Image (cartoon, rainbow, N blue to C red):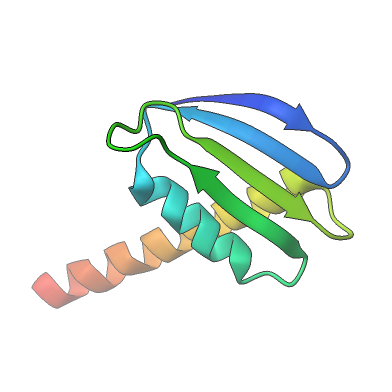
Length: 91
């Protein structure tokens, strides 16, 4: 995965995700939208091929890069919890 910062301000971040699909971007968007400090979290993808979607994040009272890092850590935690639960379930 290659991520490029296209725009960065105090409350806005635009990222280009080369080679990523809805799987990661929808997860990021969903987790970000759970946070009250997020005003906008969306991405656009050219249909039907999604080669380099652009993710847009607008925040309130928090640096968007810091918030995206927080959410990434939270997602990792969710994945680790799932891995542990799955291992326990299958033995």
